[in-house]
Image 1 (tube, rainbow, N blue to C red):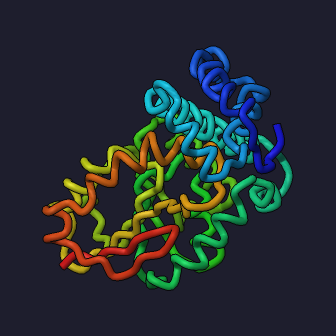
Image 2: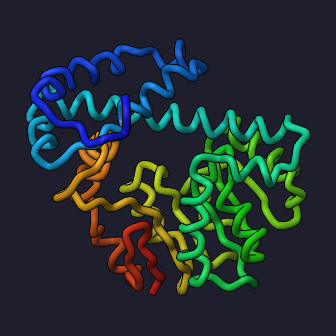
Image 3: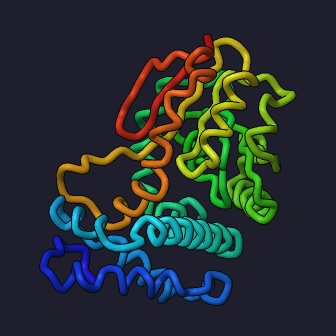
Length: 275
């Protein structure tokens, strides 16, 4: 498959068959298959226009299938990130050069260029959902001299990310703890929190944060907004209807909005402060 604009009746007729094909793939059986991962990404990278979107959304059982596909894309994405992290640990070459080969490296650089100006170097950032490859924390430390604490709920990711940090020689700047949103507030005082885009369940996270953190704490919530009146990929469509559209009804939370003030909004994050 190619990442080109895709149109035509044949695509519309076959899209549900394609979705069911991936739906019936066992993640446990094929998690280590690079070809399955690549095929799934290529499938998600198909570019569609608004007319095609309407046809796809109207297919029988679209929402059910989309939710499954979203979960699988996310799991496979984490699997790929974990494998990349392990390659950095085992590779004898310069880890910095290796990190630059990560497919989302430039996107992270652009993201941090926007985010870092909201934080002081003297204050640590806490990352909720740091993952197996704590690339944001590494870049914050190297590019902007900002230390951080990562919170990750998956034990294997905690172990892997700690080894990655050791390879980069950043153990004095970055720490990783196993936990989740209920680990907040930490014993160590902190005034800055970044919530990963993949961190779920969002309603539970934000309900807890409405009560847990101290005054003047900044929360930067990473989001991914799209202009759905123009062209976008099938993955965007699946993500929107399986995740984001279900979260629209959850915002604004009464409890959260009574405690936090929205001070900045962009296409990639929203910044709040505890009042």
